[in-house]
Image (cartoon, rainbow, N blue to C red):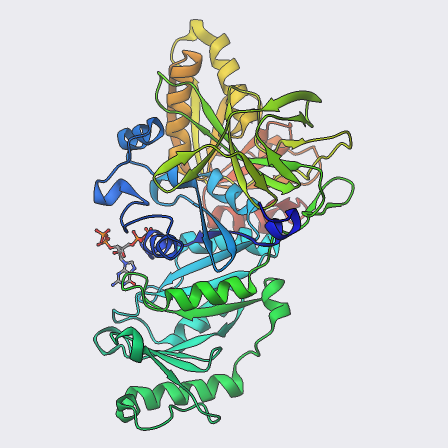
Length: 522
Ligand code: G4P
């Protein structure tokens, strides 16, 4: 291992945020190929291609058809060690998807050029924004006809409220895609052109030198005009603003044809931050400090009843992990030895012997950890700030199928709620149980684990999607509770209303301006 500091500074830990089908898997595969981490594309996610690796863990995915193994992928490129954290989408969207964003130092946002900004991207973007981390945008599928690039940039600003700086600009699109004008490297990268002739240098005036055929094409002229417009009226490039997340550098490309991906990766590595300091209750932990510390951002339960093991994912925030080391769990003060560690890499799991700040550890867990837990080595206690609560959107009423088995029902529910698998609410008077989640999968996992781990069959009745808003102060007039604005309490006893829709929320706030409502995520 190189020196500790050099190791830490070489880490780049990020997640890809996107709406399903924008090309996250394809881009991830291409990045891993550059790093030599996988042999062939099509191995990151087996869901579509039907290829599965053989580890037990994968077996679960096979049964359920969801991808969890690719939780963390690590590869090296140009002297940097890159950790890509997966953010499950589709039906496996859950609070874990949000929490993963608490463990990264930057994010890559993929947008489908034909679709623009979509719902799930907005949700994930908000979490990145809240953290103030740098966001790099990749506008994908340029080999297909998409929307005008200027329109896509306008959408970034209007919908997401982030300013952008196009690092490159497409010349044509779809069948007429000629390549990208690379403003940052001052060159043109030509599509469908052999490696040797692919790059054309630009002169002082920003035009192709000599008499390359591309100059004759009207699309080239149009791109030059648009770039002039960007130079004059667009945002200025600012490394500082990229770093504080207020300006997103935008790259155009096509992940499927592997076009623009390498340029993207290299430029990303130039501007993406190494591991950043993390806040504790008392200050900030320096990633270069020698004392080991980290926090649990996700717990993956094995869905196979024959394997009760779980994996707690830990983001290392400082120091070096060594197998067998002793650490303290901040919540309980309990000391333990970290001997069983694992790390995921695309399709095979390997044991980690050493890891440093910025890396992710998977620890086999038999119920020790909870989401948000801090662990640290040495004598100096460390306690990282609590992870935020993400606002659930889907709700179900839940009860035990067998009324004689209330004990195991309560035990299971309380443990799963503490672990962070699901959120629990009670109706104001009747104390009925209501569960909240950000994705349907959380309910399925809950049901499955209640049965398999707590021997408790549950009955769940969907009450649909709701907009939860907490009430400031601890008292509230319970006569305001109705089916359109159901009054409940969270597990800390704090009152909130579950509004049926936007309309019900607006109606309520108009009618009761004295009641202050808030959403902890905003
Ligand atoms: P996701 O992980 O974000 O959900 O997206 P994924 O990479 O699986 O890509 C979704 C679909 O878009 C796939 O096609 C993929 O091949 C296609 N795609 C990704 N990048 C590009 C691109 O740059 N250009 C074009 N034209 N298509 C792209 P599919 O037919 O749904 O799946 P598959 O059967 O090819 O895997």
